[in-house]
Length: 447
Image 1 (tube, rainbow, N blue to C red):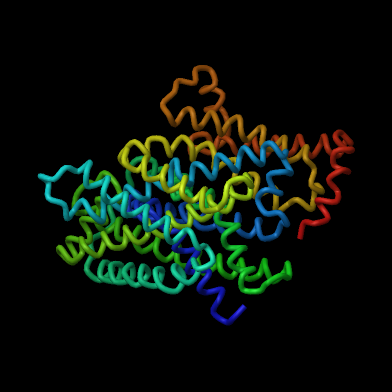
Image 2 (cartoon, helix red, strand yellow):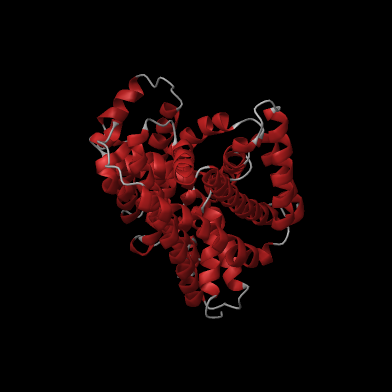
C-alpha cells in the first residue's frame, strides 16, 4: 500500500458510517444530558465508535470474516443472523431512513408549502437512488469517489458549522432531564445503538477488507494492521464530530425545547448563518446520507451475490435500490418506529458475539460456549425488543425487572455472562467434545 492509502480508506469508511443516525442523535443527547454531557457522551462513543471498531478488528482477525465468527455458534445461526442484519441495515431500515433524512433536511426547507410533498419526495428519492445505483455498480472505485473527493468535502462542511457554533454559542449547559439525571452514561450507551454502526460494521467489514486487498496486501498480519489503521481514522473523525455536534446541542438547549436532533441542528444553523446555514446543513445531511446509502448498497451487493451465486452483484444492487426507493416513500416516522425494537434486539447479540471472538483462544472455539452465551443473551434481547414495541410481557416483565442493570436497559448482560459460564463448564466436562474436535482445523485458521 502507498503512504496515504490507509488514510483514504479510513475516510471512505467514515463516510460510509456517517449517515442519518450519526447526525440526529448526538445533538439531542447534548440537549438532554446538559451538565452530564461528558458522561453521557462517553457512553455514546463506547457503542457508537468503540463497538464498530471492535467489530471491524474482529472480522480482520478471523479468516472467513463474520461468516466464520457466526459459524462458531452454528452455520444456520450465521446465515440467518447475517441475512437479518444485512436486510435491516440495508433496504428495509437504514437505507430508507437515510434517504428520508436527506429529503427532510436537504429538500423540505426549500420547498414551497403549496407543493405536493408526496410527489416531491417521490421525485427526490428517484434521483437519489438512481445516483446511488450508478456509483454502487463499481465498488472498486469507492475509495476514489468517497475517500478522496466526497468525504473531505463533507468533513470541511462539518468543520465550518462546528467552528462557528463553538465561537457563537456561549450559553450555559442546562440541567439534565429524564434518564440522564440518574444514569447519563448508560443512557448514552443505549443511544449509541441508534447509529446502527456496529451492525453496519458487520456489513462494511467485507468492503474494507476488499479495499485493502485491492492495494496489493495479502499477508494476514498486514491486512489486520491496515484495516485497523483505516478504522482508527474513521473512529477519530466520528468521535470529533459526535462531541462537536453534541456540544452544540447542549448549548442550544437554552433556546427552547426540541423534539429531536434534526430540529436542534436546523435551529442552530439558522441562528448562526441564517439561510446560508440552512443550505449548509442541508448539504451536510444530503452528502452524509448519500455516502452511507452507497456503502450499505455495496455491502449488500457483495454479500448476497456471494450467498446466492445465481444472482449477480449488479442484480442485487438493483433490487436493493428499488426496495430502498419504495420504502423511503413511507415517511421517516414510520421507519424510526421499526428501528428501535430491532436495535434493542440485535445489539446485545452483536456485542456478545464480538466479545467472545476476542477471548476465543481461552475456550478453543467451543461451540458450547458460543451457543450457550448467544441463547441466554438472545432470549432477553428478544424480550427487550418486544418491550420496546410497547407489548405487555406480563410475568416476563417481572423477570426482566429483577435482573441486574435492568433499570438502565442492560438486563441481557447477566444472562450473557451466565450463558458463557455454563458453556465453559459443559465444555470442560467434555460434553460436545467430538464436535469441537471436528472444528479444530477451523480454529487453527484463526489469526
